[in-house]
View 1: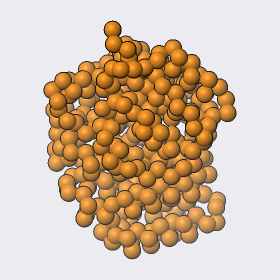
View 2: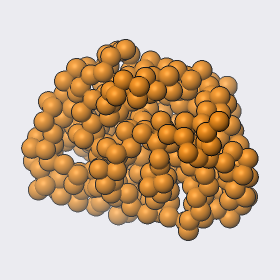
View 3: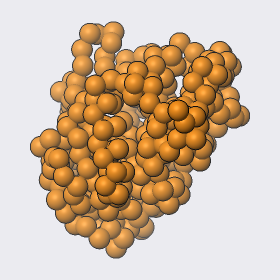
Length: 349
């Protein structure tokens, strides 16, 4: 039997891991068991300068499954740098990020691998594989599935001109995406160190480089939500508002959407995603007690207007922009109320 380290890898799963000692085993095991310990997959655990037992666990997994699991150790650089380290090390045709406190569904993973192997056997180039993800609110015993069956064709390779209209709660997030590795490398992702919310860059910047797509209606990614201090926790987002602004600026400067994005439907989707990022900046500026928050927001809108007035008009005067920037104190309370209502309906934090 061929040594697993010499086997062609259809996919690399990158696991950015920081102080993940308690969660890492579940994450890694979900991939190994879901793939039936297949030698044509690899798992790259990136220990991002952890101070607990993460490094030792990563080394144990590599020793137990040589050629399938690899451990990479680095100084702490933050989530984005760990994602890029996994990408740099990847030998698979495809690359998927699985955060260390999340996991993959076994049956869905088996289905995904069958599809990807079929692409390889037929020499069919697919730049982006999309699947559903599930918010797992373990402490509440609840879950919420985010599905794309209403907006994406199924059981066929397609292009951006074939997509439908995405609702705000249907944005393509890191959890739903699996890129062809070379496309992702070509994107040269501008991931800042020591910054949260870089998954938005990952889910936005490479899209125009993806020419061929495939959607599998499977609930693959299980996104653990509800942990205290989690990046999408409301209090944490308020505390890290400066990082939200940093990420939004990077996304703004990535494209002049009407000039740089050829497909009208992809452009419309990206405009909606970017408008949502600005809406988050607007809402959390209102929730913040930082006296500088309003100034940050004013500056960002001014920069956007100067950078690209069409993008500015769409983000500021579209439905989302209008309802998240209502004037006066009463308007501010209405904006916050609408955000809290949306949070309850769509269960995104």
